[in-house]
Length: 114
Length: 111
Image 1 (cartoon, helix red, strand yellow):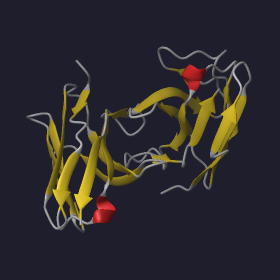
Image 2 (cartoon, chains in turn green, cyan):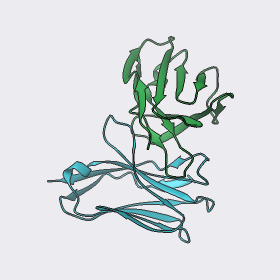
Image 3 (tube, helix red, strand yellow):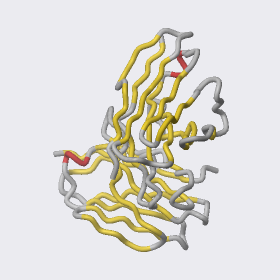
Image 4 (cartoon, one colour):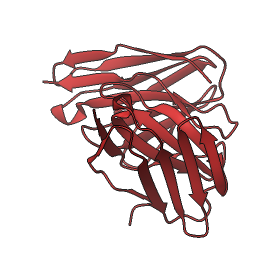
């Protein structure tokens, strides 16, 4: 398994501002993922972040809105830019060690945009 | 049609009952199947994983995969109030590909 630390755990932000979420893993992993979970909904993949390359975004998500950094094999950040109330959601960092034994998640960042 | 279908519930059962949670899927390429448990205000916790068809047991939990019917199940025996949570099924084509999640079933165990 992997232990994932995510910061901040929650935040309340003004519309038009940006928030950067940090994800730290206790072991080196090739693939890290960022998900969004809107209230009462399941998880939607935003992007896949591989170390040393540009993140791969899913349909409906763009780099200008959700820029991602992956400077090394244990750390990644997701920025939610120019926020609006529709961005209020839980954002989750995840790693999949590549063993086919499932993905592991951080505790999530609960974002409220006012 | 969604790739993965899961009844959102809520499902309420008395303590000690056997719980059956299910998902159906449409993509026959899925090979890896997972169940996650998510408590309120927490991240999903990996509960069970299986590769291809068959059963897997871990304590009070049993996961079943029937690829011919494109149907997976999670059984919880001797259910406890602490099992009250949302359960998400998930699946992927390979160990390195995108994981597709079901919408989650909200389960409540009544003392």
